[in-house]
Image (cartoon, rainbow, N blue to C red; front, top):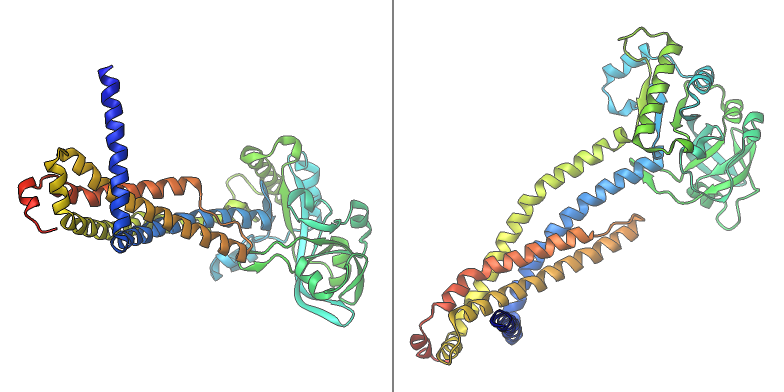
Length: 426
């Protein structure tokens, strides 16, 4: 019974302290606002950095998925020519043979149980429809299996089918930007576009995909590989995309098994001895994400320092405003002590005021960044959002900053001598 009474009294005193703190903060709005703004700026810095890191990681994940697909890998003569120096590029060009149709057929015959393959050739070319023309579009000849490997997001119509691929039918799937530029006021399905002077019937249009690595994914034209070869001649080399079949369940283990089988099959095809270096490249989406993940890691490593500096500045501001509050309320504190208020109650009230101001500032800073992230994400067409974990961390830091800032002023208020305090003019 005694324990329950003490708990009830403690709870009542706590809520009374919160109420007194709220009344004091409302009574001095300018001072409270100054402290809250300082904390809001500090918390906004924390939330902004953490959200940026999360956004970069998500951007890398989705960009790689759009450009390569999920649970996929790519075989090529040289997978990333833009990411190696000139000497290494020349060495690979001399060492690595081109990948051609016979290599793809060999992979399908001896490694087809582990992965689905789709060969692709690409070049920049003009696309014409009537009087309109799109210059330097990415025209890609590929196989009908590509949608099983990558999410091409065909929003209207369809992708070409195996029979059209075998016949080299002159059909095309357009990226959204190409479709909008060539057919701004009409349905592109069934219309004809011209590639290398040949007419291709539009059978599908992709959804808007945005960019990946600075390149627009909406300026693509997809046609059967045989039709590509007829229009532009045999490609110099092919790039082969691959993914484990759906029956394997996917996942990193299935991708590794499929990649190992493809690598071993290509080595056998090239008659490479054990220990001899591969004369082809294998690229996984993980490699494509490396740069963005590295950037995110560097930003993330700076987050604690930036957050600590911002919070330190906020603590100083809140501590000063709380000290001013204590100085202005000296007579009031003396009266309360004279009528029975304990030092602990005074200490709790001052700490509650500091923590309340900081919590309000933390909420304001978090909401501001959340709204900005939502607006920016909408403008960029990318889902950028503040995570619940970030909100919890931010508010915890705001509360901790408030308690640290209020500790010294609270001790000073609690130690005031009631008689001396009552002599201070109100």
